[in-house]
Image 1 (tube, rainbow, N blue to C red):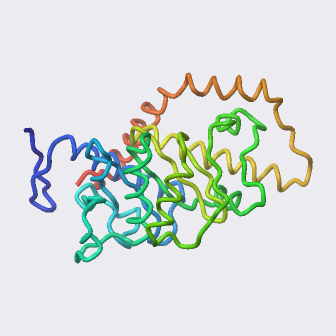
Image 2 (cartoon, helix red, strand yellow; image 1 turned 90 degrees about the vertical axis):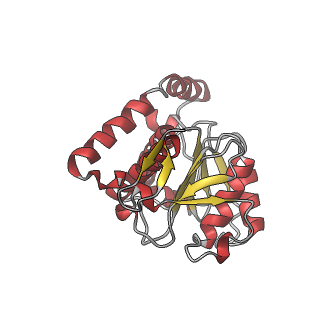
Length: 255
């Protein structure tokens, strides 16, 4: 088995796990640059086991802009003593991410955060993203909407409820809360979150004019969304380009 030794911790890591660590650390750094962070809250994770129960997660109360590959916690949803560890994760992260990784097949990667525009939209009586341009149409009939907010997600029941609400979708608008993205790869998850926040921004700005929305007819909205489905390979180029920027300006996320 090929191994990588971290120069920060001196620990050896499986090469595949290390690659996931590097890519997830990049998403934290990019999220900070995109102003998707919120204090030292919110959490991103990636599964490392086939059943999704073992996953990498950001450490408790570390700012997104400081996260490095070696900082990520390796946790097991079946380990009942996880929250007793000295380096225990945030309770809400443990609650949500453990349940989603174990129960949502497409959730190899789970990004949960409270970016400005998506969170504003989640606070509306109707938080749906309407197809009013090509970016918003990407999410037409392709997003779960959860309007049963149950408070801070620090109980197992709330994590299970959130996992069930995802269904087969890649993204979910969490009413009165924020958003979550569940994808098979880190690149696809980053791309999904990027366009989700852009679509939410378009919606909020359109609502702010006070004028009626020009919503696409269902047939055209579906055609546009289907076009996005065929364009998903671009997510990998998008993520590679963003990592190249990080590598040029601050490659410390790879440590």
